[in-house]
Length: 476
Ligand SMILES: *Cc1c(COP(=O)(O)O)cnc(C)c1O
Image (cartoon, rainbow, N blue to C red):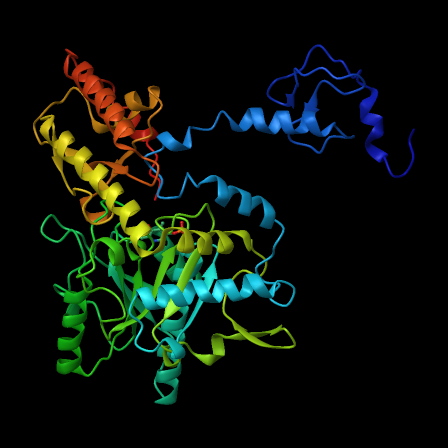
């Protein structure tokens, strides 16, 4: 029994069918099967094996305690794909994206996908561009930021100038990935505050933030807080003026995590992409409005001049050479195939229809919520299908948006409330993200519940304790 391969067997001195199981420390499957342990440790590796059915059942049963993803109006990430996508997912779950030589077909499809995006985003010369899939927008943003930083460093060094104090200019309402980028890569973040008059970055006062150490300006297409778009064209104009005045040539990365997969289809006249000369690179999340399950992102550069050769690694590919640029090595190839499936399945027309439908549902919801009385909209969901509202000033002292979020949660809906960015952090917002799969029917059901809960809260005679504020969660 105490063979060297099982040094921990001694621990099994406890009888298998223990009756005093501590539920905090162990799992006790109720699916009785002969010869199996009826309790398994939670925080240490079990000593022996289980039947696959048992292991499956335990994991399955625990995971159904998660919220229902379809009622999760907090996340931007895809929660529904059709059956053919699921079939493809299962068939390709074993593919590693980095094995370009072993999976040349997946690799070719990856390249087709980023070229499709480059074209959609009006890259000037499709034969002189570079892009890659990533695990999500976070990795894609890091790569966009790194390219800006390296370009700046190489230019400074070539002129014999110091390159040890880079800074990056962006809205205070950026997604947390940009704080991470600055922290991990030693770049000084320069946040332009959001104010009631300037909820988005629009170039106002930009001259006070940029200098010779600015590696670039980030514009967000679809703020996570409100869904609002930074005014990319106005920022580019301002950077033109700054260059004319000071000689500083400052380029942009567009964080289009959501918007880069919505604007081309629903706001085709908006100037935000490579059609503006200042835009060096664009990133997006394939797993947000790219309509693919997590995790997938994309980044594309304007041309090969804006992507320093020193950042590129070369892997062997069919006996040849394939340039790669990524932070991760291994990652799933299946998501890339799913993206290509969606491109083929939906085409331009299909993406337009899906995204426009989400925008229609979002604007229907925001309009209806506005009419309820207690709320003032911050955004309407007509950019990306994401909108936020605040409680009207002076409406009530008896309840807050945190209370409403808590009550909606009791009905299964996840509609988070959270403080606004930075300088406006005393303002509490509540936000809804509408995605593929949120039908008009579901939206109407939500509205019915929301209306009922507002009425209940309104009937309170005295204030609710303010404890929910501390428990709130914000899903960026
Ligand atoms: C979601 C989001 C990110 C991070 O993207 P992931 O794909 O989750 O890594 C970055 N920026 C913005 C604006 C986002 O909305």
